[in-house]
Length: 97
Image 1 (tube, helix red, strand yellow):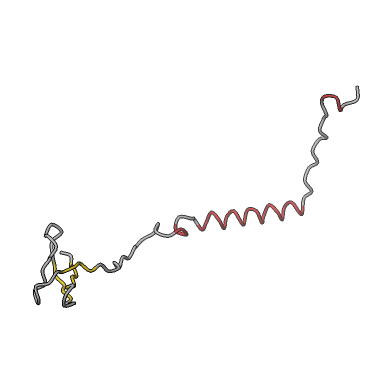
Image 2 (cartoon, rainbow, N blue to C red; image 1 turned 90 degrees about the vertical axis):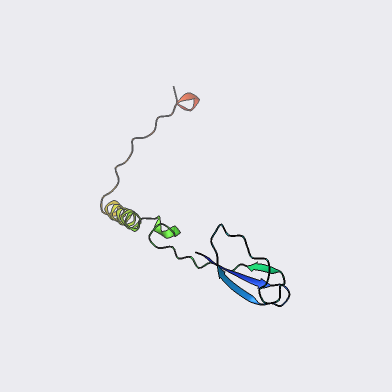
């Protein structure tokens, strides 16, 4: 059962009480009979496991393998000259007839 925090608007008395989700909120201060208001705090949530952060969705093996592939292709390109492409043929009015 969750614990809810209340504070009296008249005397300032803090109150913590365990209530079911279906229970109605408290409205009367047990000390002075004043009006209670519910106090909301930040909830401490811990996400465990993978997939909760941006860097979890990226595979580290794919980025390192891509980098090593580009490095190895760059080294082979330096050691072996690239084959020359055939000259492009011109079409239309630019070609001499």
